[in-house]
Amino acid sequence: MQTHPLVAHPDTPALAVRGIGFSVVGLDADWLSLRWRIEGAGRLVVPPLAGRGRADGLWQTTCFELFVRAGDGPGYSEFNLSPSERWAAYDFTRYREGMVERPIARAPVCGLRGSGELRIFDAAIPRASLPGLPWRCGVSAVIAEEGGHLSYWALAHPAGKPDFHAAACFVLPIAAPDAA
Image (cartoon, rainbow, N blue to C red; front, side, top):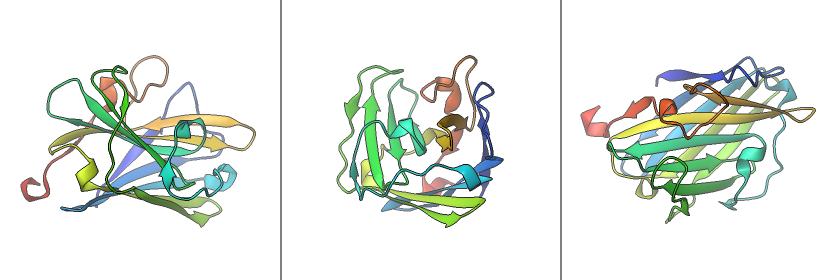
């Protein structure tokens, strides 16, 4: 399991969070399993547990995100996963255009564990809810800390303000398991 470091956008440094690592824990015919590891999480603000279900606006507080582009076209899918257990999924026809809710046959499963300085966020997205492989992915996190402070973390950032939808963020290739 390879861990990929996320970096805070230079315009939104964290207060106490020292680092976030991301890993693809598993990919099989049924699930894509993901993990974010937050170090320095002592001031992390976690949304209250709300139970599994679709919800919009999750990015306004601590939230973990996966952007998936299948093939070379301009379209992509966005998955927002919250420690509240709420989730959202959208399809875009091109950069920030044509947004519609992505059909999801079975809800993603996600949850936060740990305490103090180390927190682990695990998520599993049903493979049937994802586009066909191979993918180019953008991986990100919005981190809320005490006092209303937000920092924006990603594998890569475009120039300018934080923008997880930008093509420059889609840097992680994921191949079919039998082609890996």
